[in-house]
Length: 640
Image 1 (cartoon, rainbow, N blue to C red):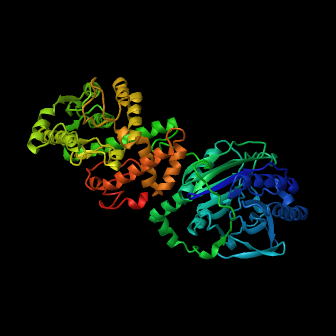
Image 2 (image 1 turned 180 degrees about the vertical axis):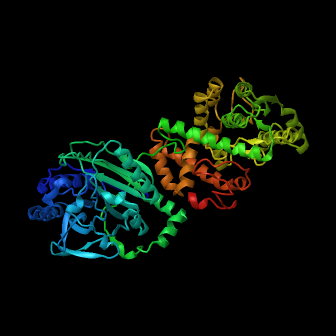
Image 3 (image 1 turned 120 degrees about the vertical axis):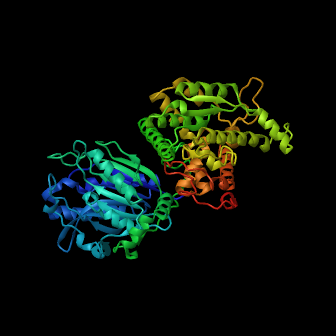
């Protein structure tokens, strides 16, 4: 199962007041859902009768037909494992309630009345229905079909599938404190809303935002479905909107105004919701403060199916670049926001120290390029001279012609000072001093160059009275792909929470919106390399990072899910197989996952002493804030 639960939201065709017809359409959708292994299915408000019956709700014949319709539903679905919730008018103690009826394997598990009854503008529900507010903190029961059925506010719980289901009805969501807020504090991780929300200009976006915000605030999944176009159009039109949300994120929504039966399905990540609730202490404090928090609300559901979900059956989009928005408009907005955060962080540091210069090692690669762009924008913001951004190119044994040329092109394009300091002679002398054979191109050979460059930058910092700006990114910190006390060290690291997959989007955004397009696109086209080993005979890069440790897009994928959700390795692999389908084989992805885990654990000591730098997203590895981990933790438990 991998912690997923499959849910659905259905909008059936209906005829207003024709219970028998409506029940037949509901049965069709429940059977379809069961065939597709949907565990929970939601129908709209008053879906058995239609929401727009008006004074027909007072007709005894309609209420009797509802009873017969429920009986027909139970009989038709007694061998189905899908739990589904329909809307129906229910009479209890001579009071008419607008209710959600929960049915599983041919049995009514519970009935829940609507709390907030709208009676303003186009709504006149109080003419027919009474609020169930008097039952909020006590459980009542109703006699139906020769059985005693819970009548109140339960959390329907499946220990096998891991879900805890709460329910609210339409207007309940629009209240200052929606009932779903109480249900989640009682443990519910999935909320379904049976709704009849008519269409007005602009209402669809307001509705989306309302659902999205509630699912985020409650750290829950929210399954919403509303009455469709076959409701009466005497005064109103209903569009039949349905959407499935998870912790503030839209997973799936339908096309409104569909005149046929329609159903959307998605898989909810219960593990993710649990992780976020455990981590969010405001959520747990809220549970402690809630007087209605009681185990008495739990009602257990026994599913027979295992509902096995794997990479081939998962109904859910898995973004292979989770640090990068999938929508182009969102990418532009996100890049501008990130860039502004980086600039604001560096600007504050320079204002605090009073320094008017910065020192930046420029390699011709993407990371130092992004740092240069941040420095340029910061100096513009503070009214400083770009020529006081002192960039240093330090050719070594692995420097290629392409990166060497691009350092000069970029610095000149941005109006920065550039100096060249060749490190080869200094490194040769250092090899002699420590007794290292230069023909042995091992980690010593590589790191001597990295530390020589850092020494030069630090000494120039003292000489020029400006901080060394760090260029390393989040992906390198996660993998430890940096030289300890070499490029690992600086005085302010502007890229420290920018993953490698996002760096290129930031540079592309700058090129398309601000300038330096030609050189920036050539830098983006350059293979990622530390350039610490000699190039080939033609001066081209020979040492390619991704050929050694695996693609950064895969490592960033693992990094995101490992840190953001504390995800099990086997689940990360399953999602990676789904995300990178037809790009990499499962064995490759498994190998890179082991590389990621080993390197992440083994290189914590580097992260325990990193420079200051701005946090820009939800993933950050600063030991002073987001990530605190012992440097000598053992990775074996994660790859066994």
